[in-house]
Length: 368
Image (cartoon, rainbow, N blue to C red; front, side, top):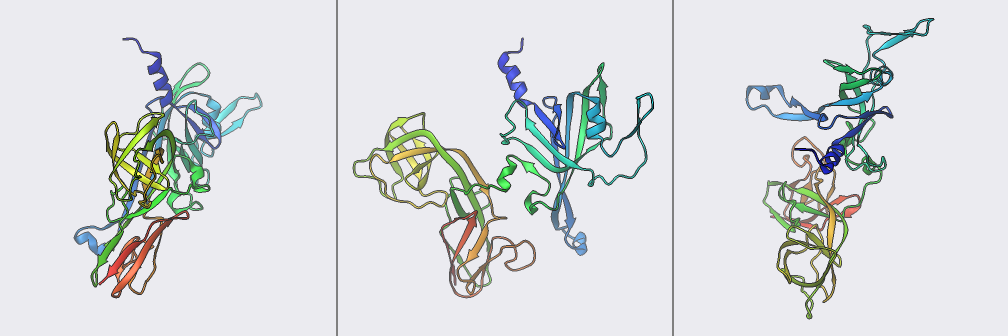
């Protein structure tokens, strides 16, 4: 069976360009790229080794491996092995490359490693892998030479942390790194009692704590943009804030199906199911407020939807710490753990979470 043009295009889209220290080393062999991420764990206390070992993750061990195609030998010596290979030029102009025994501080000679989708504009970083400090690791490295160029070069990089970067991004990451300095404001933030309560995104409005009780909460943020797919509310008497079905007409630009998120006025809504004339929905998702909507109000499907658990970096606050406290740091006891609510005294408090200026609705915590 012959390969089709579509299959060739699909293979091309798997290719990544490898940039090291701002030098484009060339394209990686499709399917050769692997990014290996392992956790570095340590026991919290030595005496726990006698029983169940409690582990604390301190960081990562990260390796990046791939096979470069058609590489200039000068890249090997001048870029990949910079600081590890040494050379002198004879009076005849010939060069001699040395494999020596000099001690090298690998962190000191490490450089930025970026993997970028082949054929995609360099300004589009959606699928980039970016590591601030990396260095080629030459154990079992294979060279396959052609006449004048290295036809295949298997490389493996060790990634080191950059302690000058933000704590959550010290090794680098995947995606558009400009989010670090120009982070988007989420369209919604909400609090949940569970770690996997991402769909449909219902905010936890109330919670009770008994004396001495601790309760962990989670925070989620949603990001989306308006799609070109729209419909209109089809209800002459309008829809109430509690309606769970929405009649629609004037569908344009495509379809809205079960699992989609839509926006009517300022309310985000989750579509559970649909018929030719009606949506069954979950109201007021993503921390938005259920409201009444007029007949013919626009129903706009949301695209580029990302729902992220942001508990670790949301700013949490309790309106009455005399009654209820909420932890904002890791470790320790009591409310030191992030998102941990604690009963202090009988009373009530409003707990909120904020992500880049976007605040969740109140979680009303009753301590009794």
